[in-house]
Length: 295
Ligand SMILES: Cc1ncc(COP(=O)(O)O)c(C=O)c1O
Image (tube, rainbow, N blue to C red; front, side):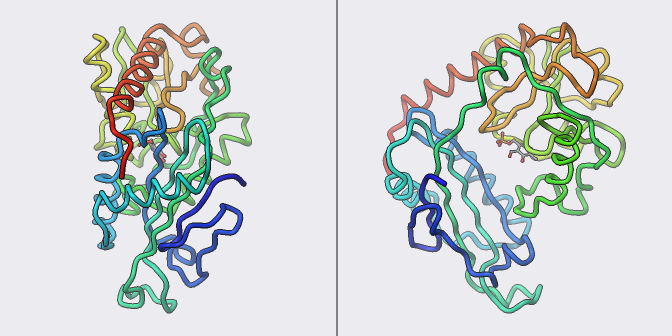
């Protein structure tokens, strides 16, 4: 285990980091999180991630007792303690905090903050060159009136079960439908398919996490002249797709060349996916070169 972890004001090497067992993040999964990565050693799209962290916390009536600048300072301190690394993976977790075992929020007056920093692992080169296989699983994405998918929640059991179903079938990501039978998103990423030269992704109203990468890709598409839009999509739409890909902070754009035992398009990463991936990487490097890495 490499890296360093901040827990409520103390930073330790990763293998020594502990949280109290009475933390409601541990016993109830009550908390929210964000995953960031650095490019050029700068946390990428920091403002957007913190905005989403605050939105997630609001859904739980969970206080965020610090400002964006203080949080960035602690991230930099944890990065410094983690030591020299090419690019970093940063996970911020904010939980209900420590208290008696009760769902009453008065039991936990002080939220807990954890920041994990470890080396960012690039997807292996075969992902961009050959694409990945994903599986359309039976597990449904949460109903928005259950644990709303808009919340980037530490309560990840549904996602874990979906992903484990995909692993059992040899997939590297699990695609889920919503309760209406529309495509929604994957267990740890958003989903896109390419049809007629345009990249299409399910609408937010399908019940999904509004990925920072997904939103950024709309901007990249506009910049490089590739249409990116949201649309209601169904499993049947997979058959006519020319290309497909998933997006997330850590996986950027990963081409999808098979869904279960069916090849997508030519069975190779397609030209629209490749253009968007190149545009995305170029823009990420440009924006982080321009940013000043300070607290
Ligand atoms: C369920 C889900 N959807 C989408 C994403 C992609 O979000 P982002 O692009 O902000 O990393 C994630 C990332 O962890 C996720 O867990």
